[in-house]
Image (cartoon, rainbow over all chains, first blue to last red; front, side):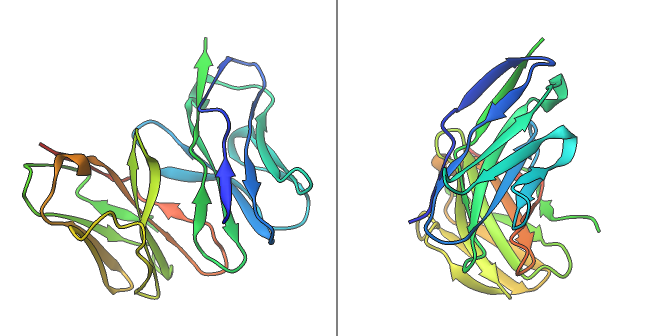
Length: 113
Length: 113
């Protein structure tokens, strides 16, 4: 069965510092990968997605992620975070044959002033 | 487009009462998902419709929960009778086949006392 692992439940980081949120998945078939962001008291919104092509994907708000097939990872990065990036970030995987998304448990990004 | 619309945004009810949550997906989307989010269990998929037909309801916690999609522009999630452990934020999301990308509504915060 497919699964998504977000190893860190919380990541504290100082403002203007770089950050990496980790995501690993398990699947033996082609996958499509997503990062969603949930700001406090809001729904989830798409940050970026990998469907095919370049393994480095750029998203909104200066975030990017790199698909690494050999390591089955899709880590999210930002070179300099702002207080407004405080949110929970979810990694998700879709399989080619199924329109459902398999969700990670989420990582809370905590920005320290 | 107004995005996915959910109503009510907040619902407070007493144990044993019937609760009905409503969702209007984005026009043209043919898949609809109901999720539940709690601190303890994170984001859980309850049921998934494709072209108004329930495809996977394995996430529905018990018979007290039921969902319908009478047409492409409306879905309901009903809990009867409600219990305190049903307290959560319920999200509706929609997508278009072949895109996998899900668009979330703002959620309904349900409190059962």
